[in-house]
Amino acid sequence: SQELEQSPQSLIVQEGKNLTINCTSSKTLYGLYWYKQKYGEGLIFLMMLQKGGEEKSHEKITAKLDEKKQQSSLHITASQPSHAGIYLCGAGPGIIQGAQKLVFGQGTRLTINP
Amino acid sequence: NAGVTQTPKFQVLKTGQSMTLQCAQDMNHEYMSWYRQDPGMGLRLIHYSVGAGITDQGEVPNGYNVSRSTTEDFPLRLLSAAPSQTSVYFCATQTGYYSNQPQHFGDGTRLSIL
Image (tube, rainbow over all chains, first blue to last red):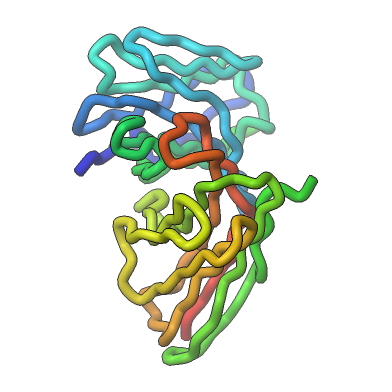
């Protein structure tokens, strides 16, 4: 079965600094989802990547999927307090096998210090 | 537009008690699923349903029952609660099992078993 490993597990950065979170898969990724979670709330969808080499950006957050489709990174530029939370990557087995049967990484807890 | 509604938000049970976690959606999504989230382990799939009357097991189904009599509702039942079931439970929905679009999550139910 597919496994996702996130690094680091915890990250503390100064406001304004850049940071990167990685998600590495044991198998080829057919759809990689990034979610953000604030304490006491559900998961909020950030971005989805499907193609090798794909890169997407939304505001100050950029997500990339490597060419081999086994690793993804989430990069935040000029971090703000609103970026604090838990970031999770999730992946499915592919459309034919049921794209929604997701496996998640263990999450990266991000703290932004003012 | 409520989206995915989970009730209750918090619950404390004694070992051996039973209870049902409720999940309701108003988006007419065919696919619904239940995850549990434990520290350092990300989200793990418990059960899922690809439509009314159809359910299947996920990664960690033991100790949990589900049924899907309507498109809107997907309750999760704990027949005899155990301390190992202390967790945060999330319900998620999507338009279809073979869709690669992101899932929509509820805000979670925080369950403690004493």
